[in-house]
Image (cartoon, rainbow, N blue to C red; front, side):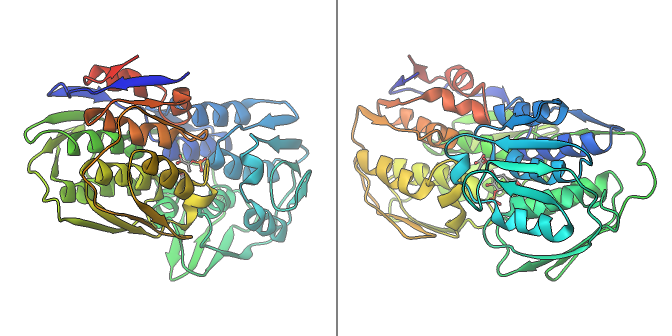
Amino acid sequence: MDINIQKSKLQNQQTIQITGSKSESNRLLLLQALYPQISIKNISNSDDSVLMQKALTSTDQLIDIHHAGTAMRFLTAYFSIQKGREVTITGSKRMKERPIKILVDALKTLGADITYLENDGFPPLKIVGNTLNKKEVALDANVSSQYISALLLIASKLENGLELTLKGKITSVPYINMTLSLLNEIDVKTSFIDNIISVKPQTSEIKPCTLTVESDWSSASYFYSVIALSDVGKELTIASYKEKSLQGDSVLATIYKKFGVTTTFLDDAITLRKSSSVETKTIIKLDLSNAPDIAQTIAVTAFGLGLECHMIGLHTLKIKETDRLVALKTELEKLGAQVEITENALHLKASNKITTDVSIATYNDHRMAMAFAPLGLKTTLAIKNAEVVSKSYPQFWEDFKTIGFSIT
Ligand SMILES: O=C(O)C1=C[C@@H](OP(=O)(O)O)[C@@H](O)[C@H](O)C1
Ligand SMILES: C=C(OP(=O)(O)O)C(=O)O
C-alpha cells in the first residue's frame, strides 16, 4: 500500500495514546514464559511483539519471526534452554542477513546446541534445547546489545547463573540497563561493574507480580518531529509516559530542545510544545550510540528545518531492518538534501529547499516510513509500502490522521 500525504496542518492540542514499548514488551514476554507468575499490562500491539508472543506459546517445530530482530535474538537464547525441544528459527530475507554469530558463539560456550542451516553466522538456526551449566563467557559488545540482553534474559535460569565479560566499546547501553532493571523488578539479582555483568541463578520461585509497560519512546519520536516542524505555540499530548523511563530513547526530551520543542511531564503523559523557532545557522551535533532508533527521525527533522546535522555512533544502523545509513542518504537526497555517510556517521548539509511530490521508498523498514511522514507539514509526498509501520506501531497512520495529516 502506497500512500500520499498532502501538505497538512497540525490540529492543535490533540491527545494520542501510543502502544507499549516493543523493547520492554519483548523482554517481559520472554520472562513471563520463564516465570508464569508475571502479568503484563499495556503490552505492545506491534507485529514484533505479537510474533514474539506467538513463538513463545507455539509448539511448532518451525518458528518464523519475519523482520523481528529483537525476537530473533531473544528466542535463540530462550530455545537454547528448552531441554528436549528442537526448533528451527527463521525469518525474512533481511533477517537472514542480520548477524547472530556473536550470540550463537556465546551460547555455545555456555553449552548450547545450535547449528546454522544456511550461512554461517546468520539465521536460520536449528536449536536443540539443553541444560547450560557453564557460567562464564566473553563477547564483543560493539555490534548489538541485543546479544547481551538475550543472554541476560535467560541467565537466572542457568544452573550457575551468568558472568558476562563485555569486550570493546559497549553499544546501545540503555537497552542493557533496561534488561537489568526488568530482571531486578522481578527480584533477580544482578550486578554491572566495569565491563562485567553477573546474574545470580534463581533458586526460589519469584513472587506473583504485575508489570506495566511504559508506552514506546521510539514511537514518540515521530510526534517530536511533528512538533519541531510546526509553528511556535503548537502542542500535542501523548500517553502513557513517565519522567523516569527505562527506555534510552526518552533522551528525545533533551535532544528536541535543540529543535525548540519542550516536554512537560504530566501524571501519565507528556505534552510536547513548540516553544521557540530555531535559528537556521544552528548545527545539530549528536552521538546516538545509545539511542540508534531515533537517528532517522532526527535526520528528517533537521532536514525539514533546513539545519545542518552531524550524527555519529551510528554503526549499528547498517545491520538493522535495512542499511539505514544508505536508505537515509538515498531518500533524503531525492528530497534535495546533501548527505554524506561513513560506516558510523551521517552528515547533512543545511539547505532551504524541499522537492515536492517525491515518493519515499521504505525498504521494509517501519522507521523509514514513520520518520519521513512528518515532512507532510512542509510538502506533499508519497510513502511506499506504508503498511511497514505495523512492525512497531500499527496505529501510526490513524494517529497521524487524527492530528491533522491529510493522507490518502
Ligand atoms: O534490545 C532492544 O530492545 C533493542 C536494542 C537496539 O538494538 P542494538 O543493540 O542492536 O543497537 C535497538 O536498535 C532495537 O530496536 C531494540
Ligand atoms: C532495530 C529495530 O528492531 P529489531 O532490531 O528488533 O528488528 C527497530 O525497531 O528499530
